[in-house]
Image: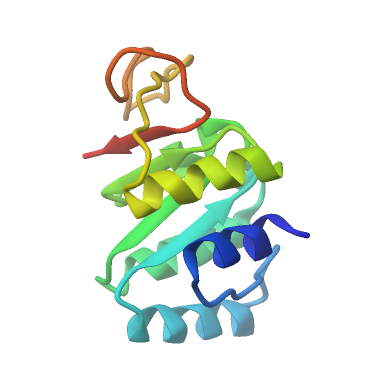
Length: 140
């Protein structure tokens, strides 16, 4: 199963796969986000994929609650300074996606701290309370 399929199932949510989206897919995602209470968008290497960057930027422009979840390295978050809620999951494997879903549902804490600095946004060590975690929750 894919990352987004696993996440949608764990959250009992609707899944819209975008990958490296075309403009039509971005517009479809924006329309879906405008109808949703909250949208979770996962990124993977968005730092090198302008289409993912355009997708997230368009979702953020809806003014609706958007959670940006980096399922690879947390550096994707640097490309979305307008996002108010970031989650760094550090992986797309089922165990990481399960942990991400639990944090998003509020049934598990995200006590980890960033092992890196995300320039202009978060210093090394930013994040939840002390302790290791597969997921860091970062809110501004």
